[in-house]
Length: 102
Image 1 (spheres, helix red, strand yellow):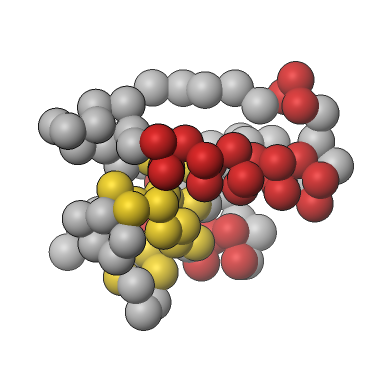
Image 2: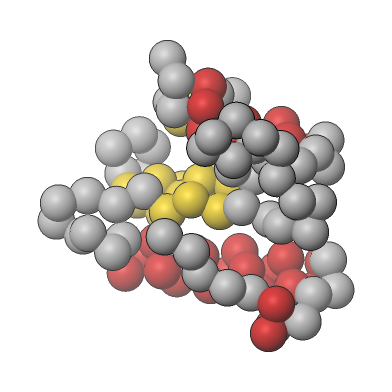
């Protein structure tokens, strides 16, 4: 199935092509679980929704939302902050290079 999360295997389908990381809302796994795609583990660029390849300078993170938390849950926000902080340190990024997109 396109866009599925697998707690055992990570990201699959279109989500695995479009994102390096996905933070679950609890619909699969636990709220705040972080799933890593093979694209991240292989250090490959993600695809855009239109099917073209994205920039090598972008790390894409998807936060899945729900009706109860249309902007994500508080736990997802904490996990996102932890993930981004870790990426900033690991990849030696400027905190000013982190932007949000919808």
